[in-house]
Length: 292
Image 1 (tube, rainbow, N blue to C red):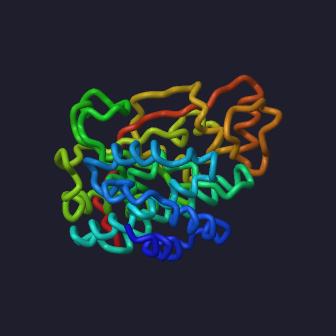
Image 2 (tube, one colour; image 1 turned 120 degrees about the vertical axis):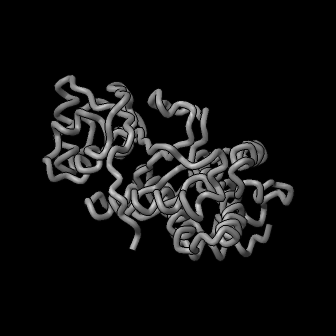
Image 3 (cartoon, rainbow, N blue to C red; image 1 turned 120 degrees about the horizontal axis):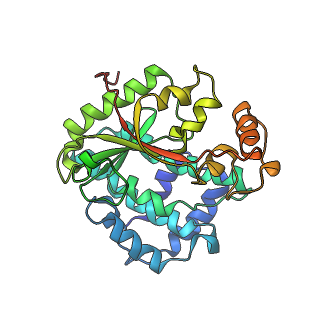
């Protein structure tokens, strides 16, 4: 593990300036025996992350800088894995753009520059999750723990994730879906360790049926949701508090912000005893659009 390489990568990813100095200190203090390279393989990434977190401070102790240094060290190996499989550096940098986004989101929510998403980012480092255009696609083998429709329960699938900076126009959505179809049939096949994905799934608050009552037909969220056939709804799930209102946990409706029209409508719904929740759906639209 070359500490200089991870600092160079941090610069390429334009990580926020306040993070760079504590990150450099954490990188110097990383135990040399950490299995950071093992983060870069689909079959070892999750186990390697468990071993790494057992050896490092919890993110609350040091703002997550040790964990961030470890995953960036792993990402340097991931970059080599991409190149070995002829996956473009553009896809690599877009996928690893999650680190700047996560740091910024946590700062906006808490006022603290901290990395609290290590539990999630072993997927990006492990060549399991790729950003292809405006959306992210995570390869999941058969038997994975997430809820699925019965006909895909034993199949490999793609799980769609929606970055906070996603642009939900028809053009961008179709471009992402078409790109994913092409990617996992070609260069991404190298990481499809249980065979080609047979379906595209998504579980998110953006699919919650309640949003159809709160948004105009022209909204990007409704456009995105219209691409999916729902197979599960959880009205009581609290996920939307973080992503819609920017609060870490549920709070009384009167304490919620009203900066956007959706926040105002959702707040009124909650104050009146209504619910939002999350839903899971299977993609029904994929019209063959390919990346430019």
